[in-house]
Image (cartoon, rainbow, N blue to C red; front, side, top):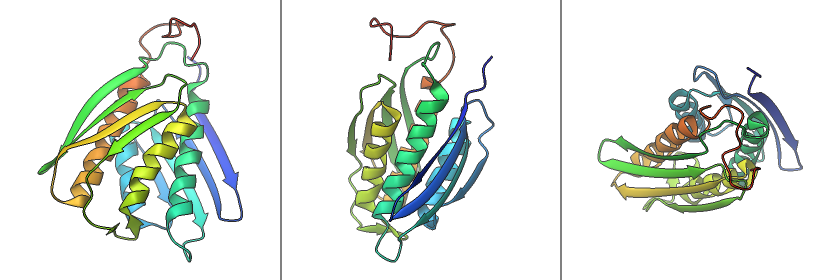
Length: 195
């Protein structure tokens, strides 16, 4: 079987980021974004998806967290897209739930080749650690674009914003694991014959 691994780099006046993924890994992570809460979420993503993820980011945090979070999502999504190659044999679709105490999140994922996102997490606070909650939503939106996937992220219930975000990342991790699973031989899971 061909290794489903890839790396991707992005360098702008705002950020310098590199990411490596192994879709058939063991959930290991080496994350350093400069944002503790984002590191925590990406570690959870790696651990629960089974995807090995390495991300190193130097961003303009003196301004705020926006560019680092957006660009981390773009680089990670591009690496995942690259690792998927022509997407032959993948399950493609996944619908998963994950709880964290009182919070329950649902993620529906389709590696359709058509970027779209809908994210509703009902945050109350402006910040979790150094991360603006609006940028958690933006992370999933940017990831959908760069992975060329449709992502729906919904909070079913929850009160604690940390729990809401973590439940969403864990649900996404489970969806990523399921949707990228090889189950169809060499078939492209599309009536179009391409994704």
